[in-house]
Image (cartoon, rainbow, N blue to C red; front, top):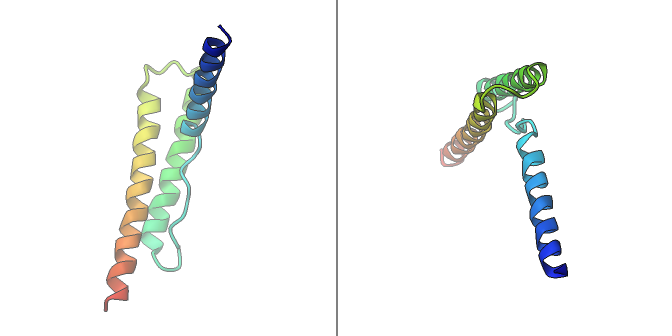
Length: 95
């Protein structure tokens, strides 16, 4: 029984940690000096994410899962912006 309780507790903690990570804002990690347009886009993704969080809070998170999906897509957009900057960096290194 102790083993089951421990496993259930671990599963619960993992779920809470995953949910907490999903609530974190996208990281701004594109250099504004090297990539001003991509950095601006990353800033706009961050602002959009904050607006979605505010909408969720104002509506007590009752948005049919669409706000959460929008946040996931914003996270993905942020990752793609970082990858675009990395590709640009690689291209400049080879020239």
